[in-house]
Amino acid sequence: MSKTVFIHTPHYHQFDFGRDHPLRMYRLKLTVDLMKALGFYPSEVIEPLLAQRELLLSFHSAAYLDALEKAEEEGTPCLEMGIGTPDCPVFKGCYTLPRLNADGTCKAVEMALENSCWAFHMGGGMHHAHSDRASGFCYLNDPVLGIKRAVGRDAKVLYLDIDAHHGDGVQEAFYNTGQVLTFSIHQYSSGFFPGTGSVEEVGEGEGRGFSINLPLPPHTEDETYWWAYRELFPLVLERFNPDLLFVQFGVDAHRDDPLASLYLSTYLYERVIRDIVDRWSGPMVIVGGGGYDMVNVARIWTIVWGVMNDFELPELLPDSFLRISTMSGYDGPHLHDIPGWSGEEVDSKVKEVVNYLVKAHPFFS
Ligand SMILES: [Zn+2]
Image (tube, rainbow, N blue to C red; front, side):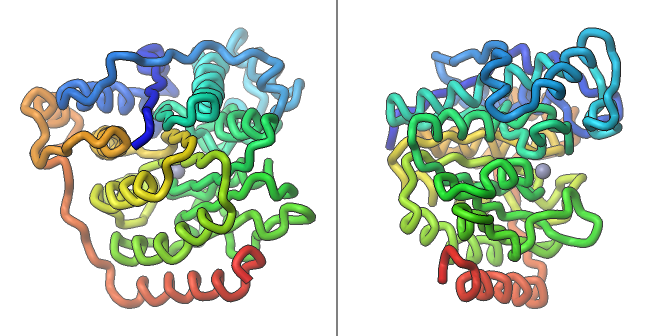
């Protein structure tokens, strides 16, 4: 087990995307509450500060940063840059919050590389932001900014993205380089955001073979997902042999998530994080991402932090947390839920995609 670092600030909890927006910062507070109730919350927490413009310019355009600053200061939207849409509204702190996220993830990368440790920054993971456009609740792409820090130190980075949505902004940023391999496992179905992430997107030029996508049909559940993950991830990790493993651990593929239609249980997430820490002892950054059922977010990210630290996971949620989680619609009392099964049809579709990847994707062939 490697040393772990926790990056968080209670300032995150105060931001509000608007009453009807699905991304609630309260989910982070709930996670902190559950970690504290279980005695998992670390005594030392690294606090993100405001990322400076120079750092942000390593990926984002100056005009876009100006527009974000104006949105925050004057409340002015900039629709051609995606600022002021229902997904990415102008709100109080719409530049401050992403700057904190960006600094937190860059700190995570630096600490992981310098101390060869594992850093967890659940406020990060805003993988949809583009260089000059806000998208999918994301304004600044903290994974890209963090990975660029690592690339600047000549590190080879493996980016694993298990959010229900394709990690489009990160894939796009590193599409032409072989120094960063992006591997995204996501729902892929008609009309589902963002619409990219097919098996055919494999990277270009020197990056050819270094973008891997595993698109999944709706209702993919634990056993099928686990089989697919195990067929591919160990092979990718071993062959690519990165200096830094960067994981976007969005949890909206959980079966109760209101925005996606995958069918995972909390057990699947525990299996994935256990597999990762069993296989990998080098520098690692884990960031958050999607997750719109707040108690599920709290349960899963607590499991992630618990496994990273080799804490014993309880079967039941503590009473003090149940009093809060009941108000958020979870009647408990278990930390885990029961895995489901979606049938042979979904299973055989996924197996077909995995077999195709192993046979036809330039990374594997
Ligand atoms: Zn998502």
